[in-house]
Length: 298
Image (cartoon, rainbow, N blue to C red; front, side, top):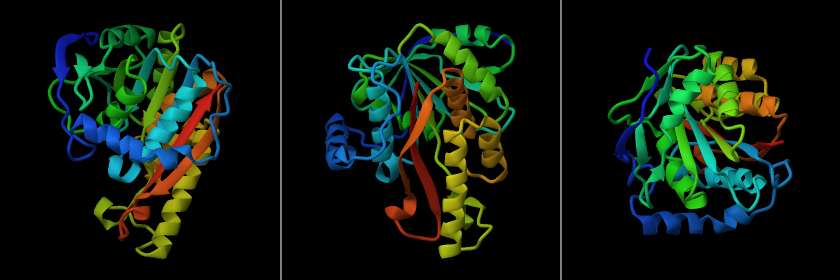
């Protein structure tokens, strides 16, 4: 298939005003309001500040439910890179079935309520070459309606305004390991933050997944399912991560997390859980989704 190519245009934000604020002042106000939460102590990125690579797993449920946890993980991972922060950020989204091609975006920028994120679509073609034919790529034209990448972009623009961004979506299959290794080779000489965007178990009848029934038993099942995925992610066990995502629905974008784990394994990064929460912490009900923030650095 043809290699993905860049296009001189701006990708429009689709989720502003619903999944996150649609005005710059409101974005800054919300992030500032998370200050007490972000200042709380707890596990930090295990790598020493000044690393040239750092990784994080962040949730993407929308800022109302999980924005502050995503911000906490991004800040912790960015701190591992030292005062200069990342030169480049790779955002790995998902919401794809196994066997799907890697989704890339051809525009040179992506609109946010702050300023556009500067995309690096020209790197997608080089990434395809680095993968050596081991992956299929699809250049996504037109709107997506997908939140796995877009929800993170205003946070990235706020914390790392000068970084170039390569935005991808990865399938939950063995290609995730190929993608991770190709990304590491592509960004070997740049100070890079790899961001894997995934929520954890979606539990309840509305999601078509409630093997333990409703109520406390269901919440206990979700928490245990989430725990198993988090443990696999910390252990960089790609096979277990993909299996838990595909067979036990423990992550909605397991391919993104698995690709980041492949990078972490190659650079011998150690990981730490910086936060865990659930939608029912904010809004009680019979449906629930788990969220984790994980950071890693060599």
